[in-house]
Length: 113
Ligand code: SF4
Ligand code: SF4
Image 1 (cartoon, rainbow, N blue to C red):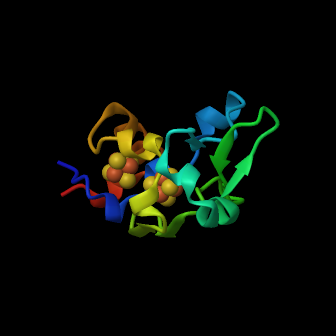
Image 2: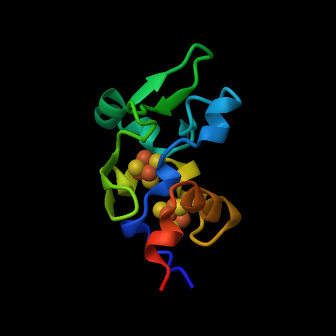
């Protein structure tokens, strides 16, 4: 059985190919009630507003959230963990969304015990 140790994963912090194919390029939206909206220091570093006016976290050239440090599937760290947006808090380790993200990154093949 795979283990769901998020600090050895980070797969859900990367926009998926499926999302991108469907035109969802923003991935991590920050909603107005998220505490992060009150952190101008963090927003100025890590967030952008899209053409529809929605705030979302920046992604790097590999479609990873820029707040993610480390190597996906090995060792990762969220730079804004305590202030992460609500969408990040809702992902549950072992959920269908989690399993799909892990599969897309071949993580269960790496960590299966
Ligand atoms: S994909 Fe699952 S195990 Fe990996 S970081 Fe996200 S919630 Fe944790
Ligand atoms: S804010 Fe943190 S938990 Fe959310 S996608 Fe970015 S790195 Fe992952």
